[in-house]
Image (cartoon, helix red, strand yellow):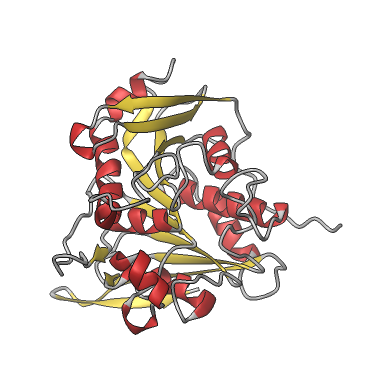
Length: 333
C-alpha cells in the first residue's frame, strides 16, 4: 500500500510525555464533579496549552492520536469529560441539564481556565513550565462548537432565544475539527429534535484565528447540505481562517477519536497523520512557536494536487490609504 505524508514538515523531535487523570475539580452546581486529564512533555519550558473538547458522548480518554502527538511535540493538552459523555447518565431520560449541554461544555472549559494552577500542580514536574498566555481551544464535532464559542461563536439558546457572547479573552485561537455549520432551514428534523442548540449559530463575531478541518465525505444526519456544512466556520467567519479539507475523510477524519475505535468508519492512518501534522504546524504557528512548518504545509497542500487533502487560508489585513483612513481587505491563498 502506498503511504502518503506531507513532506517538508520537520517540527521538533518527539519527546516523552506524562499524562495524569482523572484530576477532579469539585463542581456541586454541575451535578457531577469535573474530571480532567492533563498531558504534557516531560521537558521544556513556556509550554503552550491546548484546551481540548471531545465529541458528543466521548470522554477525557479519547482522541489519543491527536493528544499524544501534540503533547509529545511541546504542548500541554487538557481534556475534560463533559456531561454528554456516555460515562454519565445525563443524555438519557429527562435530565433537566440536557437542553443546556452546549452551555455546560463552555462552562467546563472556563472552569479549567480558572483552575490552571491547580491542574498544573497535579502533574509531577510540570509546575512553572506552562505559559498561561498562550492558550488554543480545540475540539471535534460537538467539541468544535465548544471551541468556537470560546473565540466568539454565538449560539442562540433554544429556550430563551438569546445569543449570548460566551467568548473568553484567555483563548487566543481555535482548531475546529468536523464541526457544525449554520442552522436555519438546512437542519434536519433529527438535528432539531436532538441538538436544538444548532438552530441559530452566528459566526460573524469569530474574529480570532481558526483552523477548520473538514472531511469531504462527512455526511452528517444534522444537515441537508452534505459535507460542505462543516466548512461553514471557515467560510462564514471573519478574520484569519484556514481550512484543511481531508480527501475521503468522514466524521472521524480517518480515526482521530481514538486508536481502533468502533465509530471510525473511514479508518486510514494517512489521514490521521495528515491531521496530526497540519494541526501541530498550525498550533506552533498561531502560538508563535515556529512558522516554518505552517508555511511548508500551505505550500505542499495548495491546490488540488495532493492525494490527502487541500489547505487554504484567508486573512484580513489593514490597507491604509491616508493617515486618517483605513479599511479592511480580505485576501486568500
